[in-house]
Image 1 (tube, chains in turn green, red):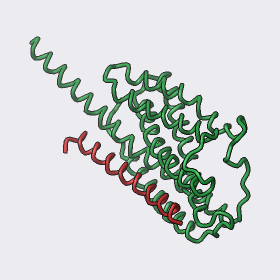
Image 2 (cartoon, helix red, strand yellow):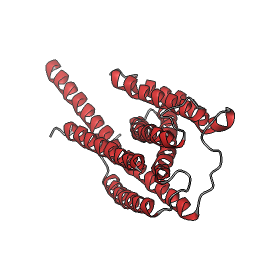
Image 3 (tube, chains in turn red, green):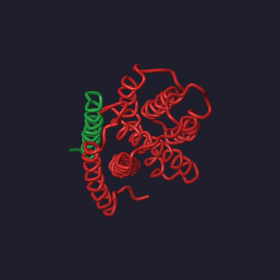
Length: 233
Length: 32
């Protein structure tokens, strides 16, 4: 497999970054224009970054799951790169959710944290995928990619649990259905689209590191093989 | 209002840190 970053990759990355930054800027502008919610006041505007980040987290870890299966099936390092890259970008989104959530909770529920189903399962999700990076970084052997792929598949089990937690357990403070004014809905939709494109751009950017690392590893292998050949000769 | 502003600032700061760290790691791998 050629470890050189293809030219189209750079082009697509730049296009996605331009679209993502323009749309995120637009969504921030829409947030300032969106009507203020009657009960909660301006703090309700946290939802326009919290919900899209939560959706992007689930998509990112879903991509890690799919790429991990693809790696185990093909043993192509690029799938491992996609899985690890998507997991890292997903962790940043998950961290945004973990910070903006308590800021919302302090105003809405008068507490920074409560052990309700969605919060608890999302915290478990965050810890599991943080563990993915810790274990992956600690491995230097050939099995690093296989072990990462197994983690990417096993940890995915928690995703539907997070999604369905508000239905499966009682005592959830997260609402099952939300009614929004049309301007609020548009702001949320634009925000979701913006952060999803941002996810795509960040994934492509992060994947460049995997490409460089693979090229470096191949160059090291080649140099070592050359040195061994000269020693034998 | 303060919490909403803090949320957006934290989001931007987190992504800027990630972008700088990613660019730095790539530069290191290129041997710069």
